[in-house]
Image (cartoon, rainbow, N blue to C red; front, side, top):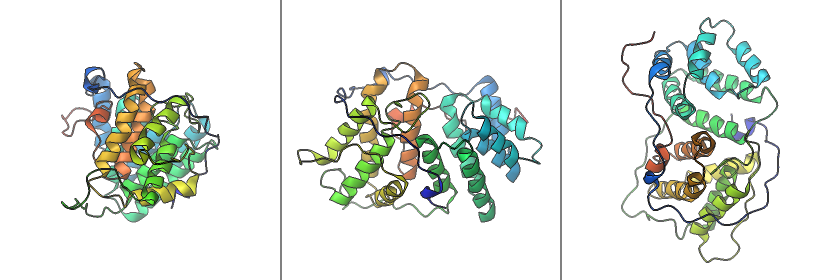
Amino acid sequence: MSVADLPEPAGPPSPSAAPAAPVAADAAAWLPAARPLAGEALTAWERLARVRSAGERRAALLALLLTPDSARERQAWTEELAGVSTAVLLHTQVQLLPPAARLPVLERLLNMAGDSALAERQALLVSARRVMCADGRVRPADRLRWLLMRHRLAAQAPLHRGGLRESSDLAGLPLAMRLAVARFTAYLARLVPLPALPDGEAVVGAAGAAWYRSVVATLWGTAPDPPPCQPPDVDALGRALLTLRELAWLRRPLLARTWVDAALPGWRGTPDADARLPGAEALRIACDLLDTPVPPTLARLFTEPPVALTGRGA
């Protein structure tokens, strides 16, 4: 399966807007960290972490992909899980998780599924595609989660840590690499720092356009004609991601920090943590796709499930 297996979301980008405000000197002073899981949410995570059968794992993972209030996706989920007696219970457990914990839990469950047989992983991807496409709308966030699933369920190659001769800045990247960064950034601009529309439709708003310009400016500097913010189609997104995976390992964390630093002004003016979450999730998935650590400022927006289980919940 390729990125083109999901249909292209509809909707044109909006015109660009004013530049973003200067980055805050210390985001930790105003960006509160997410609280650890507790109470029902912690019990729910422990129940999900104990899932071992392929059917139960599929039920939990697909529940995390459901679009809220989408009756067609829920119906597809029900049909995909026919015969799994605990499916409804696992869906209930997923609903108990706070929004900031859903992506970290999805990552943990994908890690568990990554050890399963190839046929099981392929079947999981087929089921996920059916559920996400059931309502005829594939949102930008859906495609990023699809890419995350394919990345985490693939056979993992050993990480190359880079050498001392690799350049450690973003200046002077080849034009092809800069264009790939610009295209992938334009795709993320539909969600980062804040979605233009509440339901995450495929539109770049004023905040996203300003974020895009801030990122691209770090690569183009004073060079003329930086590329405009034009989100790529499905094929161009796939090509951009393949090119980005050729980026030197020491430069990948710098690109991640550039993305996050440019998003901070938009997040600072948005006290609602749930409003910040779609953009934060998009950037966290982008870091995962590039096999680079999540910057600490971005990590503060998420609730990480504990590694050790306490013995509660069954």
